[in-house]
Length: 278
Ligand SMILES: [Zn+2]
View 1: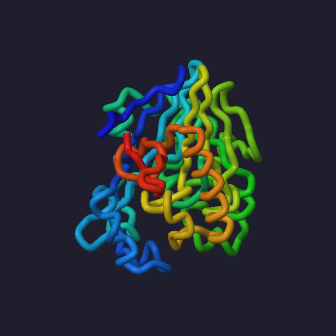
View 2: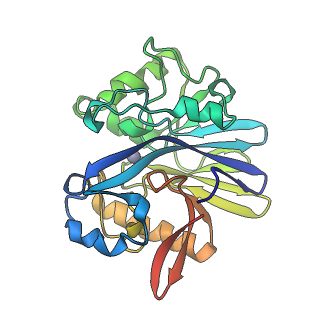
């Protein structure tokens, strides 16, 4: 397995594992049979746990031009009831890997699902990352703060709206430069504003892809959708486009829910595209 740190040009990417998670297959991939995933067991053992789908909630810290940028903030301190009382450990990971919370300048969200915004605030509604601006995709803000959707997504009230009141939340659209080496890159489908982060430095590139896929088999079976893909047709279209690009250009990818640490490349073996973990 690769280490938890890679460099892309002059940018350092640190993988931070908030927690592994396990789900019944039918709950996570409601349109697939369990047998669909059987042929991939030996290739991607990290995505299987007994009779359950094993996945991971990663965040990524990017060090670029003197700034520390955190991509997503995990499931949070918990206990997270719908995940069986799980507790994230992001802050311990950050300490252990030399990224203290107080060093974070920017937190950028790939989207506003609950497993990506969990460590925003303490129980007293104080920002966990005290000097950070929090960047939210405008289209996700518009979608998730609509009253009917917000009422189904308690993380919005608990972990997102207070940031606006405190005055540390900024909305962004399209391709926005965070530093000269880091740019937001719209990858809609999983949610309306779902966004990846393009790293481009000294002739090297990488893409932090958020929830573009959840199981490595999806790099080949791009038409398979998790139940969390809000617009399946758009999600498939985006997966095809981005995975084709990653493969053609040989880019490094960091995929949030793939086996730890989530770094790899898309390569073609015997006619099939596979996830080659670093
Ligand atoms: Zn997710």
